[in-house]
Amino acid sequence: MSNHELDAFLKARIDSLRDAGTLRPHLPLLTGAQGAKAVINGNSVVNLASNNYLGIATHPKLVQAAIDALQKFGAGSGAVRTIIGTMELHEELERRLARFKGSEATLVFQSGFTANAGVLGVILAEGDLVISDQLNHASIIDGIRLTKADRAVYKHCDMDDLQRVLKEKRAGHAKALIVTDGVFSMDGDIAPLPDILRLAKEFDAATMVDDAHGSGVLGDHGRGTVSHFGIPHDQWDITMGTLSKAVGVLGGYVASSSDLRTVMEHDARPFLFSTSHPPAVTAAAIAAIDLMDSDEGQVLIDKMWENTRYFKAGLTALGFDTGISKTPITPVIIGDEAKAIQFSDALFANGVFATAIVFPTVARGRARVRTIVTAGHEKHDLDQALSAFEKTGKSLSVI
Ligand SMILES: *Cc1c(COP(=O)(O)O)cnc(C)c1O
Image (cartoon, rainbow, N blue to C red; front, side, top):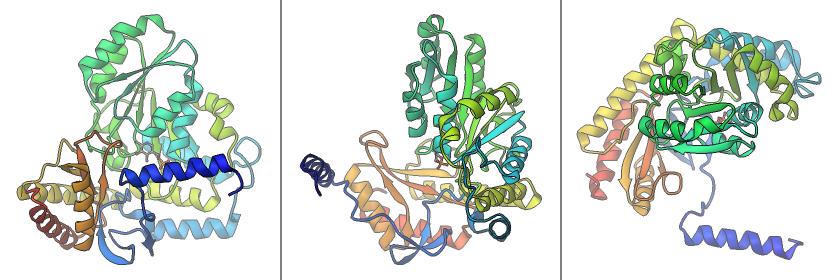
């Protein structure tokens, strides 16, 4: 290290992580493919940690589409979208996504994270107001930070509090935007979009949902949270989604009016200044959307939900507190931070990988082990997981 100040800064940060007990010895390491059963840190385990909801990250149709595109069009796209990095595949994906979501247009970004940063940066200006659920994803928070809009936070899914903020602040601002996750990633609960929409209309605010954990999970063929509630797509202003979770590949998108798409094409900085997806990624995403929209896709979604109900019922019967989840994300609330980490370690020793989530990601005293079941799990995987939970829960006096 050549710079002393930098060196000292890094050492101090690592020391503080070590003192807090949150320094990772290494990142969890996957050997082989992402699957419901996987080899993690050298052990063969039931994997309850991935966002591969439909198990299609390894689906032969996605893999073949990627291989074909790679051979036909090469490894990289060679430019940003606005210069000469827009291939026919990119536009094809956007057409399919718009049809799938029922929106006038979509624009694809390199990731869900950059989609949020891109769209929020474009629509929010000085003098505007953005109102955000307290538990919204980091990429929404960072996206808002990139703007000069005034910001307000409402209590998690609390419509009285959202109404209070609107009453207090709406009048003094030009545009207003209410933004929420569709499905919350740490609790697995669903935002009350119809109530949010009612308040938005009453106070003349625009609406945006981040559907990273809702797309592919909720609604007919996984069309997402807006469809789940039966809200017509022309009533809801902006839906952001990811291609990295249920879709099984990589990327993010904004489904919206074609005017918003046009403005993002000109003003969204991650879109303008970062190279587009390689052909293989784009082709695999197209194959994934096709799959989700087919009978096979609906079968996978149904299986994921059947697994979800089975696993949740099993945890509840064992006496665990699974919080307020309504989706395949099921937290097992432990409370104490150190105990949650110990719980996750003991599960791993018993052949199950599920991550401990502690403060500051969730409130202090609400530490948990988070589980996500997928369409890729079989009943015997879930039974194996439930017996590991039972054994661990009893030995740590959680149940
Ligand atoms: C994962 C996630 C993102 C980011 O999506 P990526 O495609 O992984 O960048 C954004 N919002 C929410 C709510 C997420 O869970």
